[in-house]
Amino acid sequence: MGQLFIASAYDIDSKTCCTFYADKFHANCYSYSAAVRAMHYLLRKNPYRIMWGGNDVIEDIMDIDSEEDLMGISTFLDYDNFDIDNLEDKSLYDKVMFIGENNKLWNYIDVEDESKEYFNIDDTFSVKYSGYLINHTKKLAVNLADYYEKSVSVIQNIEMAIDLVPVLTETGGGTLMAFDNCITYNTTEDLAGKWCGDLLQIVESLPEGYEIINCCFAESRKRSYYCYKHFGYNKDGLLLNDKNGTLYNNAMLGVFGNRGPSCNISIRKENNSTYFKPVNSDNTELESEDINIG
Image 1 (cartoon, one colour):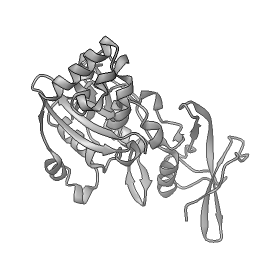
Image 2: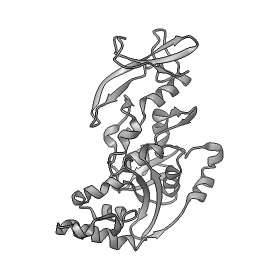
Image 3: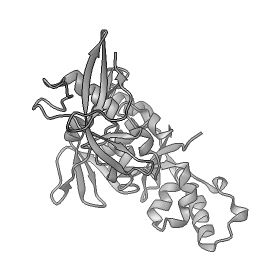
Image 4: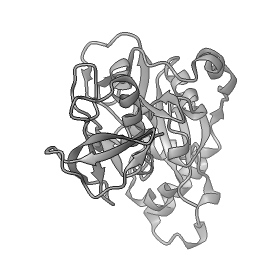
């Protein structure tokens, strides 16, 4: 069936949290997704720790030592999620007890209606990408407008982006599914999960002392559709990545997420149809099927 996720925003001091069922990662990690909308809405109101928690984290509890992370897990897991009778390791047993006890202490809030109205979702079909996503724990920040410009893609003729919050805060294993084995050259896939459980906030102005980092998450096929629509291709039939004439670049991902060599996209028109074909930098074709985009 695949790993299922719960998006969770939680405040440890007030014991307030908001959890949102996010299904499989690649089903609800986009700028139009309800789970993303709820997290963005809360982060624009107050700082929250964010955890995009997958149920496979049950198998990793032994390796988690942070009390803050265990509390985050307790927002979406309880005693019942573990085989308590067969927990022979004392340290693991104590962690499961901690999760179960804290699960009963949370005050759960629902912001689905408020977030929909806040982003005027029926008209915009997206959260806002203005201001900065800041990480109070690590003193880092991402310029949201810059992120969206580099990551915006097209799915079913709708402009959207894989949102950065799910990728940065996931507990593991989801992001590769969203990338579908191929990413843009600009994608910063190594950042996946690196902000999990950190204290985040969305603000309009960058606070003093925070470092802006490069951040981009874009699956190649959806991003290439966007680039074809907005930037077209050059005289050699190669897809462009921006208005400055920069060539589009992507890279395949291996089974364990390792990045392969970069390549361009060749555009071919035939019988009123348009085809994409990955090619090496010397314009020689790679062993890959043509993609018919209509």
